[in-house]
Image (cartoon, rainbow, N blue to C red; front, side, top):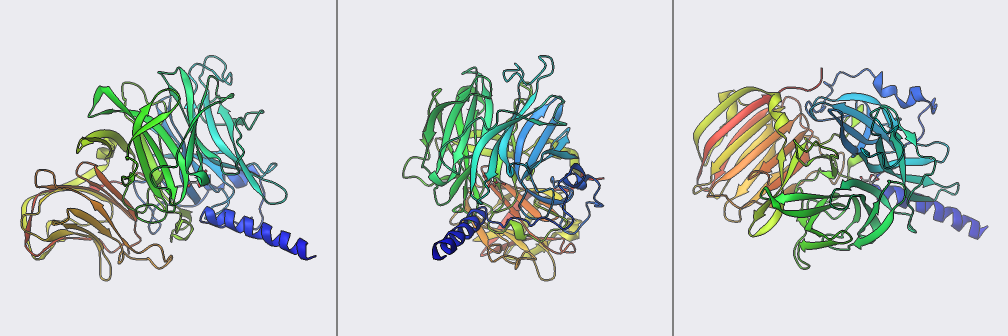
Amino acid sequence: MKSQLSLICSIIIFVFVSFSLMGCDRTAEPAGFEYDADQINRHLQADVDFKERYRPQYHFTPRINWMNDPNGLVYYNGEYHLFYQYNPFGNRWGFMSWGHAVSPDMLHWEHRPVAIPYGKEQEEGIFSGSAVADHGNTSGFGDGIVPPIVAVYTSHYTRNDGTTWQAQSLAYSSDGGNSFVKYAGNPVLEFDDPDFRDPNVSWIDDMGRWLMVVALPTQHKVQFYSSDNLIDWEYLSDFGPAGAIGGIWECPDFFKLPVDGDPDNQKWVLHVDLNPGSIAGGSGSQYFIGDWDGTNFIPASPAEDDAPLWVDYGTDFYAAITWNNIPEEDGRRLWVGWSNNWSYANQIPTYPWRSMQSIPRSLHLKTIDGEARLVQQPVEELKTLRRQHIQLLHLNINEESLRLDEYGIEGIAYEMQLEVDPSDAENFGLRLRSGEKEETVIIYNTATETLTLDRSLSGETEFSEWFAGSYDAPAPLQNGKLQLHLFVDWSSVELFVNNGKTVFSIRIFPDPSSTGIELFSNGGGAVVEKLDFWELASVWK
Ligand code: FRU
């Protein structure tokens, strides 16, 4: 009896630990739960107007229910496909499936039926992964005319005793992503570890083969595999532990970029996420730069004793992956990340959906202090959303607070660019989304050349003890100036500093009436040499 009890206790603890490792509880099956196509796709019928409190206006959100990581980003036949971790049945993590949306420009999205639903028969969660366009029909899943889209995802199986294991599986689409069929021989790749997930596959020209990078989260490792046909995978190498290892490693991506735009000087970027232990607390993103010899990743930075390289200094950028199959004439490396944090993801106060994806960004390598570093820039397409434009030149901010509504500058969905000369100010900055009782503050400390984003008083914060806080990043002046490029949406701030050398992404939940924008300086005056403000249009009809 005693041993049965302790077995039951161990199972309960195991299940609890597994799900709290994910930072969330499993959603209970909703009342009247029917596991059929109507239920799975009820989001398409849901009565939503995209004007709900906190609903982002130019970021992707599902119509209803829970979303996490972007999955299977692939460009195909003139459309960007966004698959994503989705719970068709509720507004918390659970019943993981691949949701689906398509867009001509990564901004205007059409919500589609769920692409790969949770597998009820095998209790198979469809965890994160990638998708490729198999132009050579190497998999044999196509008809030899239309290239199939092949999704490579993690099957998260739950056994009868409640224990779980993970392996890599395939599903393919012969109709351009409208419908998917699971490969009968799944899973195609297993490893002796219950945590083995998030396969990211791409075609590597130099190798003439598919390359997969996949995480061993609790070992702080990624593994590389290669394949001729997406079905049979050959083990190549391990990388890690390295860099930041204060949490599990998830959602790797691996790609090559020219340094300073020079096609003869290319470096590989290994991006891998961390939960918790990130720079702003909780989950976040780090990267490594190095070379690829066809078998091994050889990292150049960070050097062994150096600080990790962070993709984002805010709290809300995770699990980003890049689009596959972008046409050569475009040539950009593009990604979106999940704008949330596992520390409080299931608690953010939005209904009837939860989570958004970041704005799409292009990725570049730039030499900074002699080393290649990842730089992110908002995609050009965002300019199409610009509406009313206001420009201000040579504003002296002298130990005062200047409200910009006097100039017609205020709002809750906008883009703003500033070039600031700190002059003799000890610090200067901006208050955004300010209202009677709230504000989100950006402060630049001239002596330490550090930028701080403070959301302690940003609005609703008390839903989680992990939410309120302020976050710092190094931001050295460039020729004596600071460049700020801001994207504010109804419940988010994305800040690109010095042309994307430092990036912050955070969610905030202020009152819709908090539209104020103020400039301030302390301990001396700063000069805003140029300020451009654009209202941004909603992408939802
Ligand atoms: C990252 C992650 C992945 C996993 C997915 C499950 O946010 O934990 O590692 O595949 O979410 O939803």
